[in-house]
Length: 363
Image (cartoon, rainbow, N blue to C red; front, side, top):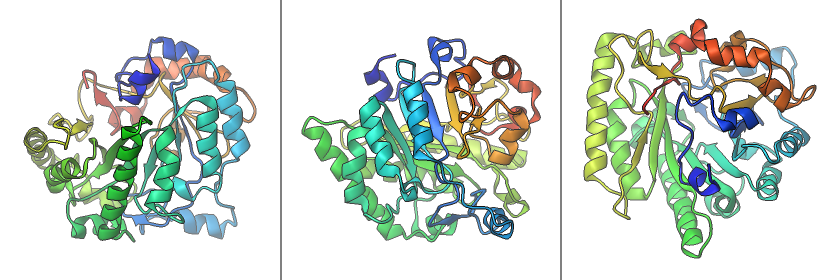
């Protein structure tokens, strides 16, 4: 797979586990750099929701915040030279731009010729959108802005602490820097709305697609809610057949809007992970759904623990212990019989069977 193909979003398809990338190593690695640092309190977040006890439990136990050593990141990237590694992702739990070594991550991407794939909450803390964009855009493949409504009221109800007018202006600024950089011959990174599909915001999905087109956002992507807390059970669009039916109707509407409302360049906003659910989706998201991660991507926790996927941390631990990159090489873990066994038999795990992240094989 060429570097250009990766930058344009032609990523490995779901279920493509027996590939050259698998044999050589992950094509993308997520580093959980600073999951305990965030300046918002999104209602669905496992660590920072008002319903979460993660931070209070940590404080009561007098445990320090989980923060990854920059030396660990450098070590893994050095080991991955000459493999299939094309991208890295700094923490998708917490706000990665609060990580004190973030500038060094950007420098490592340039040094190792690896692209940055970033998910951020749109606040652009400490420096502001323009200064961050000028640093991020040259090395980024995709910048995902967490976005959870097409209206101020809904977005602010989901992402507690966020200010609608501010994040819209931040987004405009970031895209302006991106476009100018591309027009002068530099890298053009994709910009994405990243959302969580919930009862509170699913009806605004078509509006978010329309908003994306008007602002120059290339893609709208998301996943169904992980219900971490009993208070959020009513928000899942997989909770019963009636909710599934309403979700499926909204999927049709979203694609119709994408066809009618185009980006400034005339192209359609790309919709990803927005597909109809089986009527039995309460248990399994789709009957033919496969894991898009095993044999393709790797996750490294802040303490170096290897994780096979992006499921909530307490849940993915049920898949087993595969090793720690502080003690053994990522390559050894990747080629281990235990990890290979998981790839071949993952649907034997209760977590994998109900996982929100599986995708239809043809997506």
